[in-house]
Structure formats: structure tokens, C-alpha cells
Length: 227
Image 1 (cartoon, rainbow, N blue to C red):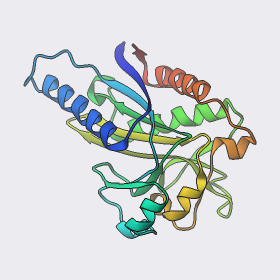
Image 2: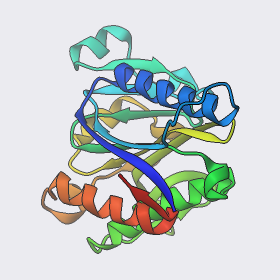
Image 3: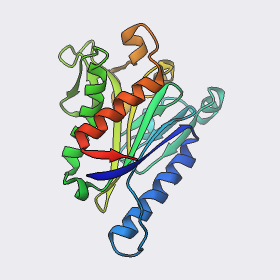
């Protein structure tokens, strides 16, 4: 069984966390390609970020609907990054997960990896009796996918895979301030709403419990051990 190092970073600046991801990715790549004899391990990072908008490499900057001056007003930052997908928001009350994994060691292709990541979220939400699903033509996890007027995203996803090793990941809205999504077209969609577990449940689920459930499904669905 593959061993994956789990770290809960609590609340951490986006750029600092991105730098950490890149450092772990580089060490894994160097070990995999024989450039370094290090015993680097795959990682799973959980974190909450201060208010930040990130734009994927294929995204359109006009999906950010505000200017830099207004960003300062709402205490948010903005980064263009190297993952797939369009624009999204990260902030307090949201569990952001960054799996930095070797897909070859897990015998997974990229599409299967993303589908498994989505399934981790779906299984976790079903423990709270939230019926979440995949939506054709859109990554992430959604509610009411068969009701176009009611469809809403509860978890965004965007990944990068280089030399078979993943970066970036998912952002699950637990008790997120959803008003921050009003300043973007989330993931490039101008007509789709965004929701959170708190909004759907009518109460704020403890972050620590949601994390425990996520970790349990990660271990089962990916078949690795957390250390």
C-alpha cells in the first residue's frame, strides 16, 4: 500500500502554499527520474486560505469581474496559476485539498484520478445526506444537475499533472462566505450558482469532522495509507 504524508496547514497564505506544493512536486520528480536519491513522499495537504482568486492557465481574465482596487477593498488577492480550469475563489470556511501524488504508483490515468477525486467529495457529502453528482462537461461536484435553473456547484476542482505527479486539487465549500463568488464567473460559468454545506444543511458542520470524513474516503478510494 502506498504511504502518503498528510499535513493540515490550518490557515496559510496561497502563495506560500503554492510554493510548498512546487517544492514537494520537485522532490518527487527528482526522485522518480533518478536525479536525486531522496526518499520524498507523496503528500496530501489540507488548508484554508485567506480570500484569494486564482485563474487557471486556460481561463479568461475577464471572468474576474472586479478591478485590482476593489480586490484591496474586499481584502482579496489574485493569482494566475498553472493548473487547469478557469477562475475560482478560496477563502475561510473552505477546505482546500492539494494531493501531490504519483499517478503511476497508483496506476491511475488523469481522467480516472479526477473522477476518483470527485468521488471522494461525493461520498463525503452523502454522509450529510447531500446528494451531489458530477455534471457532464464541467469538472467539480454539483447539486441538482438535472434542474438547470437550480444547478449549483459545491466543490471546485482544478489539477496539474507533470511527469505523472499531481498538483492543485479541490475546494469544498463548507461554511464559505458565498458573496465572494459574486465577483467572478465561477469556473467560467456565468449562469451557475455556488453553494456550501452550511447553506444546504442549515447549520455549520465542524471543519474537523468534515476533514476526518474526507480523509477516510481518500484512503478507501485511492487505496493509500496516511502517515
